[in-house]
Length: 308
Image (cartoon, rainbow, N blue to C red; front, side, top):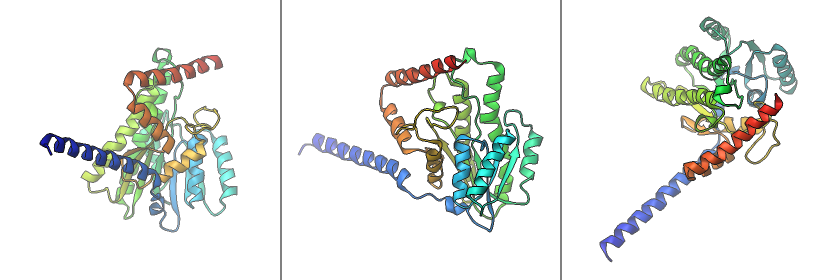
């Protein structure tokens, strides 16, 4: 047997093993049980969900209550929040609910600090940075300065400031805490959503860096940092498309998000079929991927123009 044959055989076996391990790791992420229960300790564990008046945030609040957490719902529309809380109290009478009103697009450092101080009387174990804004699909040149600021403040500034204010509380606790950030698949190559995608990318990058920072500060055993990347979801972000395999309902997405808790990674795609979709796009030549994504986003831009 020639040495060349042995080398190529070894390389082939190593490649097969490598691909098998990557595939196994990919599948295991969506088969493993969630570790959400680790954050349900004490008599009255609480969760703060930002942007909880509708869409994914509302569904996350519902699912967390289903897991017997008490929930603080954040939003800026008092009537919408009260309607959600009224429904939740009827569905889950064993749970407690609070609402906090604060406009994420204009909240000051003092307001955010006061918000965090208002939680001194409760046992808060999870922060869900879900609030998002500025999901308008249009060219950057059509985007007003106020719309740019609105997106950056909602999607990047507010979550960063809220997380900064919450970290000392979590670090000082003797038990585990979770910071769950909701990202977006639009953070890579989504034309006509450059500001929204860019601002959500900040959330994802912060999660990756902060997870390593927790290791550096010996806080990793106490504080889990996880960012969930979300693609197309109906019943959320003004998307009322019919439910399909690659466009799940907001309630399905919420279940998938919570199912990924405890996976050990910094950033993951929350929903299995979104992960498959993005993996297939990643295997294509960039020119093909760009063409597909551009066609989809241009159609959405045309829909936005027809609505005006």
